[in-house]
Length: 112
Image (tube, rainbow, N blue to C red; front, side, top):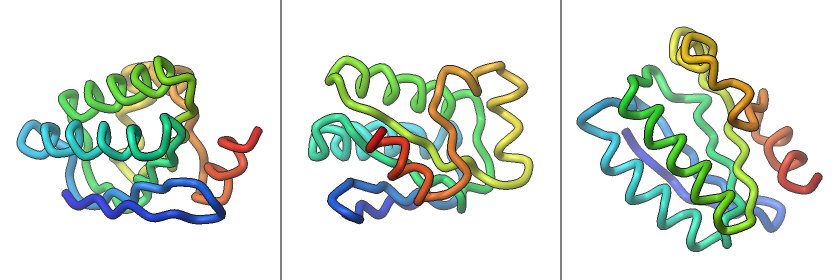
């Protein structure tokens, strides 16, 4: 798993690629928390290049959402493609997150 933090149109975007599983979840937790802190709690997580997410990865995403809420920020997640996207439906968490189709929709969700 790789995370690349960028600033687009004045908003912070964390581009995540690879697999989010038991092995990589601690890195996502640490880097995601740092990205939230740097962005004041408002962040787009671009997960369009994520190939796989397991329950530990989902747990980290829930924690990041709660941290963003605690900071009175906003978190938008660009949905992964393919089978990685299924975890949100399987766990019925799609309504817990702000899931968007692409980075532009994520930026728009933050501005709303």
